[in-house]
Image (cartoon, rainbow, N blue to C red; front, top):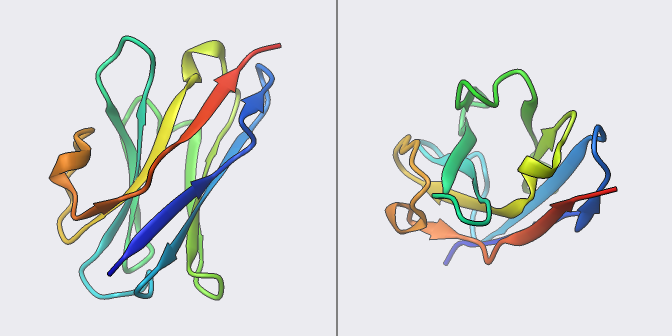
Amino acid sequence: HVQLQESGPGLVKPSQTLSLTCRVSGGPITTDYVYWNWIRQSPGKEPEWVGAMAYTGRTYYTPSFKSRATITRDTSKNQFTLQLTSVTPEDTAVYYCARDKYMRKTGRLEDYDYWGQGTQVTVSS
């Protein structure tokens, strides 16, 4: 049974870089034909897909995040990370990591096989 657990700083100042980690248990993140995603839900907004890393290591991003987001992985720790640069208060959200066998590109957690409980990130000075 795959489990995902997000972790992050909780509070970030505007203009800083946000770094979140998703630790995966129950299977390697290099499992064939699996995609590892980041999704976020900001207050009062629909959840949005931020980006994903495929089992090959290739990354995909929503165009609006492409210039600021970077997804990397550490296979030795079986985890992947999201870095988001130049954050603003609009980046305040609950961030989730999720896994699926297909490239979903949706913000609906129910569309994914597995997802974590989410981690709250607040951007404020």
